[in-house]
Length: 404
Image 1 (cartoon, one colour):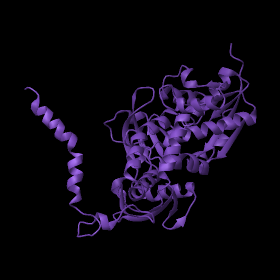
Image 2 (cartoon, rainbow, N blue to C red; image 1 turned 180 degrees about the vertical axis):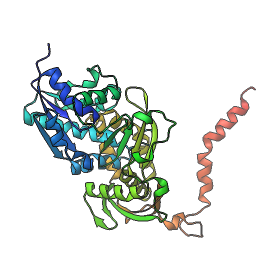
Image 3 (tube, rainbow, N blue to C red; image 1 turned 60 degrees about the horizontal axis):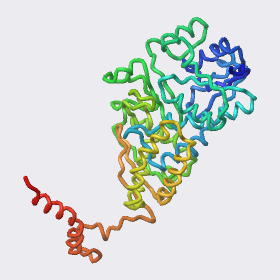
Image 4 (cartoon, rainbow, N blue to C red; image 1 turned 90 degrees about the vertical axis):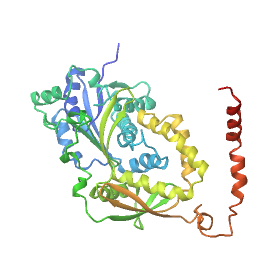
């Protein structure tokens, strides 16, 4: 028999789900609810959350500023690795969950609580991401996941529940899609977006302007990298969080970083997600520009072969696993040579590399030139091709000997 819960720490956002969860937990478990808010760069969404949480029944609320830690210790290591899930998703939601869950467990210890709760659905990825971190930190922690317990069937039921209990929620039947934001991205799911053939409504986006409203004049920027990390924008040194925030502004103004994709969830189903990742898109492209002249071919190809697995690990919620940490060590070593400057052009949804330079560049104009040179003897290529083609020649001879 489960031990009675006395106090639970809820990962609270003030959105539809967590707005009613405080009330629901108090009624279901007859316990105190401590609201926890992780400020990972969601901006204005935090305003008014303290009053709202207390009004709906929380005994206290803890709001922690985690923006710099998020950018420095989670986003930047992931960008050093070049992580992209299924070719498009820069993992904006996935990378925030291990930090939020870790900080939530710190509040559990501080408030001497005996349980944690989250508002993730039983169909999604976030329930896994949160709970894997909880159990990594404390294998014995009690986890309350209302979506897997209550009899509310969908967002319409939640909206009705909120209305019946006098709880203000930022979602209506006209705009039932959910939004999750942080310093790296904004994501939208549900509602009208569940039809993958329907174009997202223009007024939904927050970071990025519509393509048609982006400036007719391109914006040029320069980003300095050291060891795979962006350290300066247009020659001005900036902290990870401040640099990412500035790139969000510049990218958003030029409609950079919008992604509309159908992805494979960890639980097995397909799901459509709309993402805005302007700053992350720019950082990713800039890093690729500098690594193209500083990273050796074989290291780059080996690194590229491991990116899908690394991205899966983050997407599935195994940030604290030994496997991720081992891969991170390799990616960090590979990225240690990525030091230099990238020049990029932002224009109507495009982030185009237009220049790159590095003090320790592997690019040698004397070797690469199509003009006459005294460094490379082109006749040497004949022997290289002869040796390289040996296996194909042997295969061809064998095929001719086989009976038809």
